[in-house]
Every structure is written in structure tokens, then in C-alpha cells.
Image 1 (cartoon, rainbow, N blue to C red):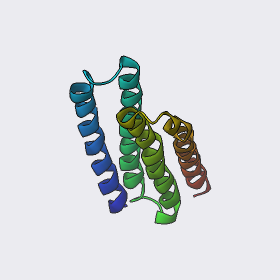
Image 2: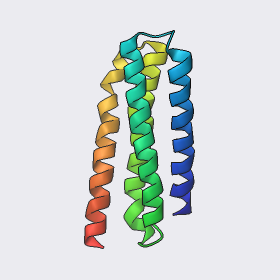
Image 3: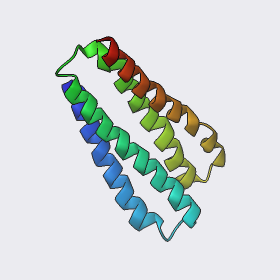
Length: 121
């Protein structure tokens, strides 16, 4: 439980750092469309980091087995979804957009698995 609180807080801090960097450093260096892509990555990154904090808090009330895989899927989702968008904008390697939906599926499966596990609990 404590682990997911630490992971969530760390990822939230990183999201704020990347969001501030994007707003200031990237604004004059990339196209507005690319800045919007970067901001989408930051938004989903922060939302799911906050979700990990909630999952960590839930973990104090339920068995760790209930939250372990959902939290892992959500963390992997942040890395793949947001990470691919960050890299797409920073490197201009456009095919990275093709792997972004894999991260989205990790988010979806993570949240649905959490709901299912909590329902079964």
C-alpha cells in the first residue's frame, strides 16, 4: 500500500514537472498541435498518478492482492501512454503514436480489474 502511495506521489510530481516544462520550454519550440499532444500526455499522467494515490489508500482497507495488478497496469499505462506522447513530441518520431493505445488499454484494464476485484471482495 505504501509502495503505491510513493509511486503515485512520485509520478504526480513528475507530471507537474513535465507539464511546467512543456508549458514554458516547449511552447516556442514545437507546433501548437504537438504541444497539445504533450499536454494530453501530462493530463493522463497526472490523472492516473492521482488514481494510484487513491489505490494506495484503498490498499489499507483491502488485501494487497486486490490492488497489486490494477496498480501495476495503471503504472505501465502511464509509461506507455504518456511516455509515447512525450517521446513523439520531443523526438518527432511519429510512429510512437501507434503504441499509445496500448497504454490506454492498460488504463482501462487496470481500472476495470480494480472494480472487479473490489466487487468480489
